[in-house]
Length: 142
Image (tube, rainbow, N blue to C red):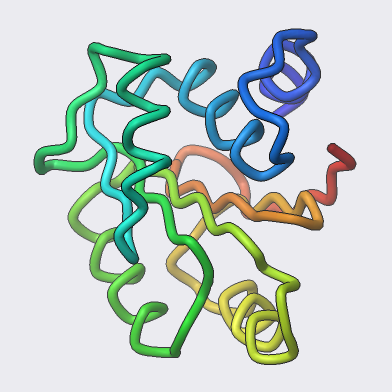
């Protein structure tokens, strides 16, 4: 995690004025996923990803999934299914503190057992399914 924070999140390169989008793009730059899924239809984000990372695809199997925000507990169930199908996958969740519902769903998500490492960056969060690592939760200032 230290390597990700120092060489990924805290790099001087700025991809976007939006903090969350900048963090998401820095995650792509650092983890170099081959395929990304953008939930909740984010055409502008897809355009930015294609511009910055032309080799990244949008086909299954997905190495990383972007959620614009948590909308319902049903999404948490689909995340659990993704974790089973894609060990080593990464979930990026934007706007984890947008409203009371988002905060509650983020807290419920932290209580689930299917993820191994979670990272709370206030604006957004990450979940990792790397089963070789001990279960941990990090809070990082971005």
